[in-house]
Length: 417
Ligand code: AMP
Image (tube, rainbow, N blue to C red; front, side, top):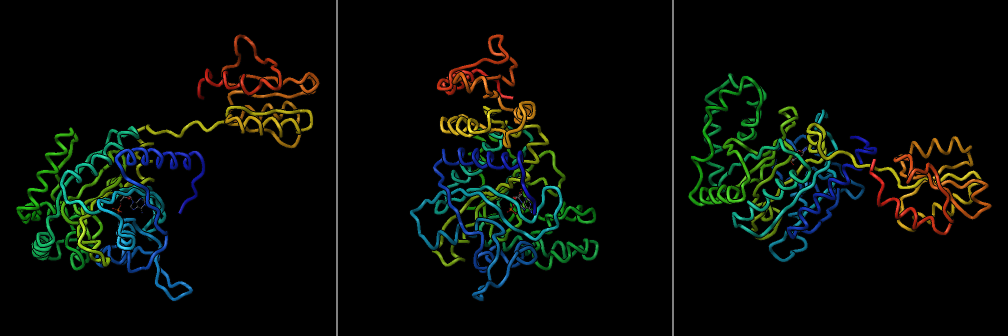
């Protein structure tokens, strides 16, 4: 678990703001769910997933309740739906930290942020297209260009079950040539063997049956409509019939956004799909569901690798320097802030030289200087710090009560650093 200091903390916050802009413009409303829920809520993710069996931060609280820190949002959103029964369709977005006890490495942390959306109550393949498109558009808004969209369908529940049987038969026939790791996975969750990146497994995964042979006509039609919709919007995708996702509840459309710059084990920037059936398993009525979650930390690494979505300039507009004792700095800084001008100041009544050094370091566009002469004349001096001069002057005095209007005019013209 990491601390986030500036500028990373600022990039992360802006990331969420951009995401909110994109999805709120499409009618999604924010939901905030608790960080801690009954373990049972997350257990619905599936007994055969690592998230549930190995990675949960769970404990018994003082009231003897078995609870867990949220490892993902979808189960919480469905739990909230069952509890509040909002009108359908219900379109929500979220952001915040999740916790998984994984082996930390670049792009994989025990506390990591996600942003995402979920829609409950709509079966229409056009919704799948909308959801995927919003993820795609968001990556474009960040400036990412090396993202690949992978698309698959896990079929209807019966299709998936028959496919899992076929995979089990296929991999069992391979016997001990399969890696030890994958043999253990096979016993719990044959689908996940397809995720293995181990050298020994590659040829057996390549020769494994693919899900399309098991699609019911309904599943096949739905999938074709999603592909046609994406094509109509000009969104490029690769059909990957062996794309399975970590969580057990996925049905039908499944997709992943893969980055072009990270190691293959950590290159999934985000993903999602349909999970018709999850609401029911949490005690609600049969309800269609689809959504995605995007990893914030990993996407920001991809942005840094592609040289896009850089940290913004965080320097203030004005830095107040006062060598008359500090009371003027107190008052003037407060006035500037009240007028919406970002302002900082020096403390401890230090020398002019030390305060100017601090002004420089702050990156402020202007230093606002109050010395004995200014105090006596009822003026303040303005010194442009980024441009060096304004109309040939390195520093000029203005009446104290005209400081704000002067700065407002000057700030309109100043380049950002
Ligand atoms: P998932 O909820 O497993 O489908 O993951 C969705 C996205 O969340 C992934 O594509 C990653 O970008 C991100 N993610 C999942 N687990 C971690 C982790 N331990 N650390 C950082 N990001 C993660």
